[in-house]
Amino acid sequence: MPPSFYDGKYKICVSGAAETVNCGEEAFSIAEELGREIIRHNGILIDGATTGFPYWSAKGAKSIKGGIVVGLSPAMSEKEHVEIYKLPVDYHDLIVYTGFNYSGRNLLLTRASDAVIVGCGRMGTLNEFTIAFEDKKPIGILRGPWETDEVLLNMMEKSHRAEEMKDKIVISENPKELLDKLIKVIDAHKNEIIRVL
Image (cartoon, rainbow, N blue to C red; front, side, top):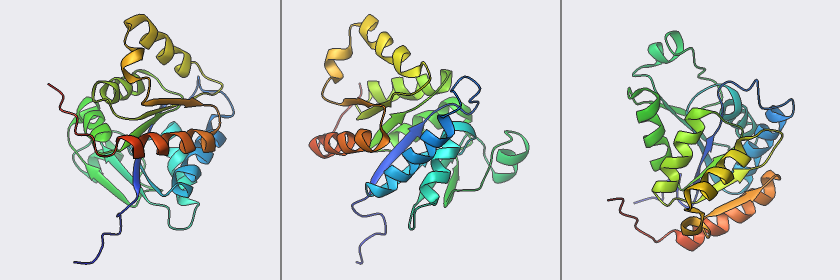
């Protein structure tokens, strides 16, 4: 059987705000660079097929030759995705229409990925972070001119659970450095089977 086109590629989820009004002026260029770095690190970008931070990351990924972007939509069809949810279809090679609304989509999105990178975000981003955290999945926290990184670190500290994920969470304000660190974490834990009971 011939090798899969996806063999050896890291599936990296980009989690971030669809509405970026509180992300700062640099958010789009940072998101684009993050998308480019995912492809440069032999990755496939997985996102929520949405607007804002993930959309700009997808745009960055597609600007690199051979860049692949897969989106998981909350909608049940392309028509619903575009007309009801008002979400884009460009910069994606494939969109899976889950039909599970946002919360169900978030679960599938994180579970379909080898790691989750959190950029500027809101409540949905926190939901994706907590799913990845509970699933003990490698997580990259991208620092930037937003508050999301501080909220996540504060949340972990106050929950007294940061210690259990200390070897699976990496933090940087530089997309390349973040991916360098995250790939090492993925490789170190790639043979683990985590059962969430």
